[in-house]
Every structure is written in structure tokens, then in C-alpha cells.
Length: 71
Image 1 (cartoon, helix red, strand yellow):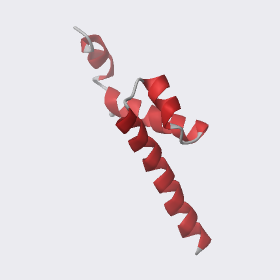
Image 2 (tube, rainbow, N blue to C red; image 1 turned 30 degrees about the horizontal axis):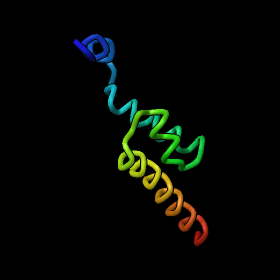
Image 3 (cartoon, rainbow, N blue to C red; image 1 turned 90 degrees about the horizontal axis):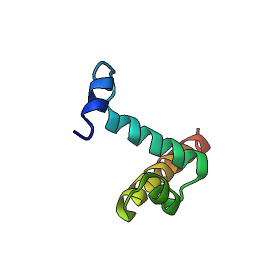
Image 4 (spheres, rainbow, N blue to C red; image 1 turned 120 degrees about the vertical axis):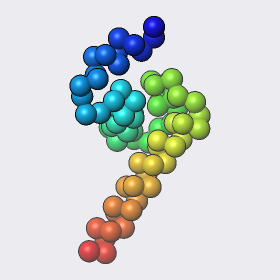
């Protein structure tokens, strides 16, 4: 049964459950800093997954900083 009830609830929405979870994880990284241990604990992520999320946010921030610095 698992996620069946959840799939039925969000069937009409433009974004699925997995995408909403990913967005929530990224929001948590932005709110609390890029702490992979915190992410692993809060979202039950493995080491590699939590590092992927934190590195994605820190790389994005570095790109934004360099583009605004030279503008």
C-alpha cells in the first residue's frame, strides 16, 4: 500500500511528491547552511545524497556571487 494514498492526494497537482521533497530539502539547506550531517539526520539521507544537495546549493551560490561581483 505504502505511498498509494499519497499519490491519489497529489495526482491533480502539477508537481509530484518526489519533487516537493527535493524542494524542501534544498530549502532546508538554504535556511540552515550547507550542513550535510543535518540533512542526513532530518531527511534520513545517506552521506552521498546529503553531500549532493549541499554541494548543489554551494556551487549555485558561488556562481551567483561571481556573476554579481563582475556585473
